[in-house]
Length: 144
Image (cartoon, rainbow, N blue to C red):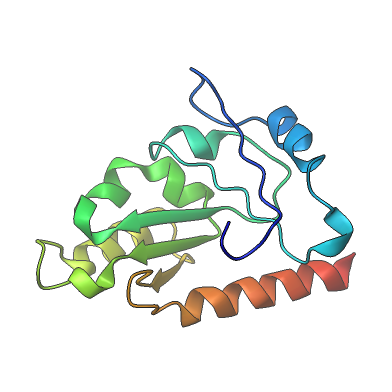
């Protein structure tokens, strides 16, 4: 919200995932003609968000080194559904027990063509992710 005035929060109540109807209703609060990129952040666990089509052009899976290197194997549906995998908090590699090789092997065993981008929101190491966003938004705009 500190980067844009156009934010719509969706409260799912007791439901686990967002659904397309909720997203459509929230989009009514946004001036779509004034944006280039719409991000639907479907937070929660690593299971519910991937099973539903929200009308998105791409799905992004985010894992954190603080959660452990076994999470890709424990949540294969997220890896398989994601167009790109973000590995966040890489600034903590070497501080927390996390084997990046094991994580990458698990991802590749499920999705050999997956892009894995190592990022750190805290340190601002976001270049690969921001580049992917720009390229993806440009590709969508060109096809429209």
